Image: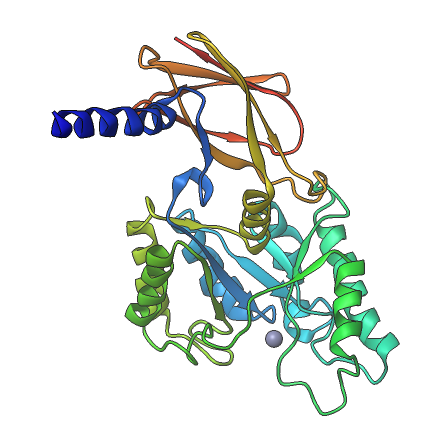
Length: 326
Ligand SMILES: [Zn+2]
C-alpha cells in the first residue's frame, strides 16, 4: 500500500512539470540564429590587396560572408579604392573600423580623428543602412611607441561615444599565429560548436601580403565551414554581438494561448534602433497545428511545425507576436 502511495504521489508530483514543459506557448530564445550551435566570424585586417584578389571571390563562391577592417587613409586601400568603395559595401559584407591610416597619432586628438574619420567613411560607404549604428572596431597592431596616447578609460569612452564595439582580442585567434593549417582553424570552429559560443579567426594576407595564410589552407577552412552549415552561423561581428546581447536581455511573455492562437511579446531594455538584430524563437504549439502564420508589426510569414514546435524570427522590444495555427 505504501509503495502504491509512493508511486501515486510521484506521478502527481511530476505531472505538473511534464504539463508545464508541453504547454502550448512555451517559448525559448535560441542560443544563435536559426538554432545553430555557434556564431563564427571571419575577420580580415588592413585592406590588404589579397582580400580583393582571393578572399572576396572565394567567400562569394560559397555564399559565405566576413568582416573587413579597413584603413581608408592607407596606400593599400587606395590601390583598390574601387573595390572597397563600390564592390564590397553592396555585396553583403561587414565593414569594420581599423582607424584611418593604421598609424595612430601623437596626441589624444589625433587618435580620436583616426577613429572618427574611419567611422565617417564606413557611414558614407553604407548610406542606406541606419546611422548611428554599432560598428565593430579593431585597434591597429604594431604601433610605434607613443602612437596611441590614450588610457584604457579614454579609449573606452571614445568607443562608446562613436557606438564602436571592440572585437575579441587577436591573441589565440590570429591566422598564421594561433593556427597554421586549415585543419587547425577548423578545430577552432569545432570548439565553438561544442561550446555554443561566438568565435572568430583574424586574417591578414591570404596567399600574399603579410602574415599570409596559404590559399590552399584558407580553402580547407571555407569548405569545412560550408560542410558545417547546419551547425555554424557564419556571420558579421555586429550581427553576432547584437544577437547575443538581445538574447541575454530579452524576456518572452506569453499573453494568451488558445487552441487556434498564441500571442506573446519579446521585451528588452536595449535600444531597438541599435540592437536591430532579430532573434530566433522556438515556441511549443498545440498538437493539431501543422503550419503556423507568424504575425509581427503587420508582416505575416508561414512556418512549418517540427516536433510540436515552430522556429521563427522576431524583433525584440516592440510589437506583439501572433501565432495562428492551421
Ligand atoms: Zn592591422
